Image (cartoon, rainbow, N blue to C red; front, side, top):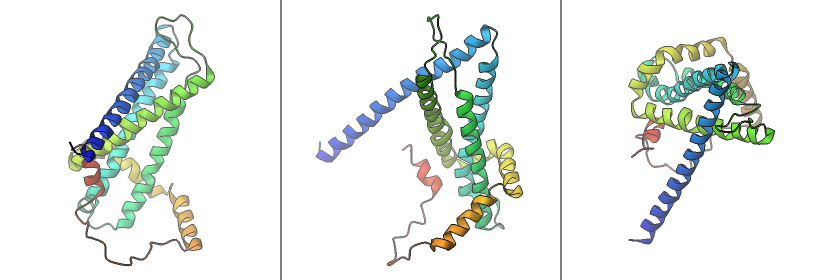
Length: 224
């Protein structure tokens, strides 16, 4: 075995170890979070359970939005051959509304004032620990299952992804684009670009052709 192969295997072993540890931590946090909601419902407090259901629906919507970004970029010219790239840029900017809104709402919904723990009579009420719990739980959930996973799935088969999610999610994004919610950010970017003379750097020499690469192909390569 060469030195490079040894380093590669060591690196993969480290990634796998950290990944497994984080996944176990996430699984425990997820179990406790849903257990708390069910425990409260059994004892006559439906609030946490309702929040959990709304949270789950928002997470599914976010996953749909994240994968849709990759699928739409990959298939835009086929879907709308007559529409310019500026329409795609506007659509992508409008999609960010849902990402910002859902992540913010999900973080608020996931927050708990106390946490019921199995076989422990008194709920846990440590304020700082609960905030850290919420931060880790929400971050890992969004990162793994509402960001990386749907983007990869959409990249592997954009047409199938659009068929499954496009009818529901796509019109919502298009509506936001049409009414102009992203307009302030667009104009701010334009003003800053003009003020700072912010433009692409000139190419001194021709770079190797990379026309065969795309955002979808990059995400699809995540899993060999």
